[in-house]
Amino acid sequence: MTHQEAYRRFDEVRDEYHAARFALRRGLQVFQYDPAGFEVGSRDQVTLHHLESCIGNLQITYLVRLFAEFEAILRDYWLNGRNRASTPRMVDLMNSVAAYCFMSNDDVQNAHEVRDYRNDVIHEHLQDPRFDFQTCRSRLACFIRWLPQRW
Image (cartoon, rainbow, N blue to C red; front, side, top):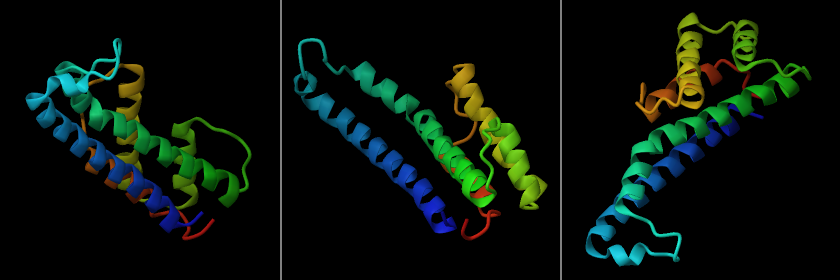
């Protein structure tokens, strides 16, 4: 993998997030004029509440997707760049990669804060965004920039 490929994966998640946000906002506008148009089946009716809930959870949903890509990138580096077949916990993986790549403490700490936030979302059912999507993306990208250009 290369830096370019890793960043492309982050960009794809970002672009999908923006598309989903646009589609949901447009859906809300359309719903105001034609709520019956959202009935897709007898049991699958989309309501205003569903659309608003989806918009409210969108940033957190895409944070989880973004972090999954980040983890996949690090695990690929661990396997192919460091030739390690083990599967350490994410906190240990991040710390090991950071130490090997001589990363700045600030970039490591910022990425760990995103990891902690993601863990709170998953394990504690946190619904209030601690960081916006762009901040999470930027912090994880700063961690990735320390990896070799190609591995």
